[in-house]
Length: 232
Image (cartoon, rainbow, N blue to C red; front, side, top):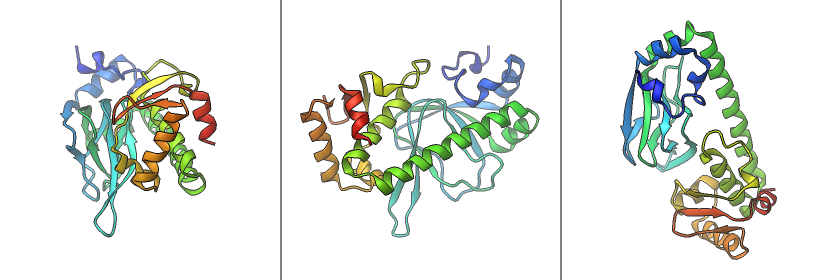
């Protein structure tokens, strides 16, 4: 039995497009790897030598600014694909936020496999277009929404992406609890706000009974419909 047979994201990752024999062939060029929090898998600007499927855990995509600061530009969740197939350099650094398990492939081996399996290439295209849609929504969030709308949208995005596979796509219609993958300073950096504004908005949502904050990182969405309204 290959590790693909017991993979928890087998039916939601890009390899879901492959049949059993194709999965078997893919497993021969991949390997499992565990990353500890803070450990990087890819580095911005370096040669693109690896691609990977995320099996468990959360990772961040980040880029360096001209003044040497890190700017987080995205979060990678289970079943997401990371790396740049068919590309020569890596656009962003990829670093584990939590302990993470990934299925890693040599980019050259993966590119060759994808070229001979059109269904996998099609799945990659679907993922790329979905990522483009998320990027456009993020541009709207940063460019047009106020602080309250940004925080609400951010919480809903995390809740949707962290929902267990097979539970549908309507997190705004049910209560949900999750751990924030970021510190409040990182949330502020991601959303273009100050840490004081982030803390104030989270406290306000808690005071209004829309969310609960059992601990520094834990969030419980108590009134998802109102939170959706707040997101604009």
